[in-house]
Length: 144
Image 1 (tube, rainbow, N blue to C red):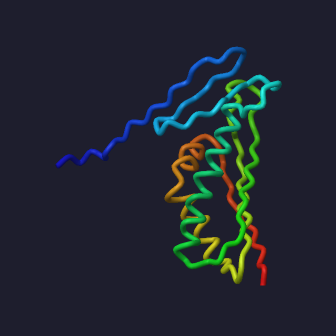
Image 2: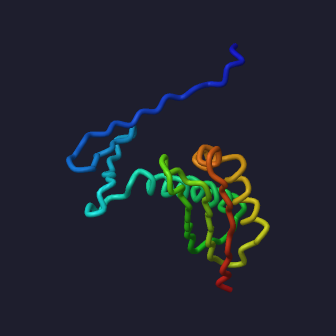
């Protein structure tokens, strides 16, 4: 048995679609258009990073809250980021706000879910956190 961690290879394929647009297809067969051109109604690659972060941490948090038997009726994630002015225009500061709505939501359960996502489970957060400071917070609206 090897002491080497197991490695998983993932592949994405992109096809040039003209202008500054590409049609990207994931290994699972899902397609999305991405573009730097402002006149196209498609997210840019940098916007997709923020969407990926929100989706990754959101899936973690909602899954953990379900296991903790929290009665969530609504959940939103807002991701805001600051980019450097010079190239490469990387994100340097990212703020993620989790907005949880439900019945008798336990603030400790939400805090724990957000912390676990940020520090243990969300691969996108870990990757972006290598170059940007990520701050996660949460807001709870109880519907009781």
